[in-house]
Length: 355
Image 1 (cartoon, rainbow, N blue to C red):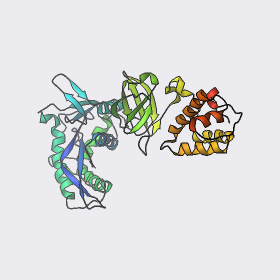
Image 2: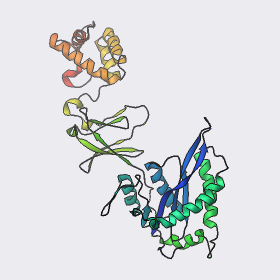
Image 3: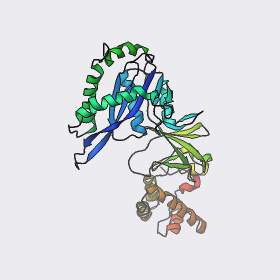
């Protein structure tokens, strides 16, 4: 089996043609599970895991888990020409997608897609897939699984039997051959690879990009510019011309949240950074009770409270143009409410809110 391969050189990967199944406990629906297979052709030692999707996240997670199972890294990954791995495979050029290229760089390995219409390039993994379909998947076909974890635990039990099953034509097993091969694997990096997906976005007039229905700021100089966005579970990184220009913690939860870094704002916007509803109401209370009630009503009238900040500021400024005077008089004129005059300085005069 291993005469044509060097130990620790290649890991071959692919999706099995056969699927497994999980039963949805709420609806009774049978959900297909797609089976990933990785094999080391020198020893035949293999790793198998089921996923609900064959998308980029599943493909990447499968590689990370396979290397963890093997306890080391091969010098080469050989794969099929899947879109989750390969963008273009021409005569003279192979273009990997960014996520797959990042995985290769993280593990210090090279990815060599199988040549188009050259099945011998993946003979080991395709042969293993056929055996696994019989030894593992066929053996589990009549069992019912209520979760993906339950299915994978059954797969991994059969996998151990598969790897320790004696060879038919020579001594030993895949596991014993792997014991000879494992010292030739490169060590795992200190941290497992974290999947990143890439998007393209355009910075809007409000110096934010919208990705996955969340909004993150970029330096205002990049308004109307297209940027590349790298998303991981924890971070959002923004690149322009190949250079990283900013990053944010990734937002989760309700859609249309904003993450704004003060330094990204134009100078004329930065003076409003410290506005918030509590400070508006506190200031209005110093003007008078009528003003405070009106400000509370204005702020609560907007779906997003911050929209009211600009209205209040604009109303007071408009009032100042018509009737220069105290803050209460300006706001009274701007929003049509009665407020007793007071001597505190309107915050727009200095950009500093009263305490």
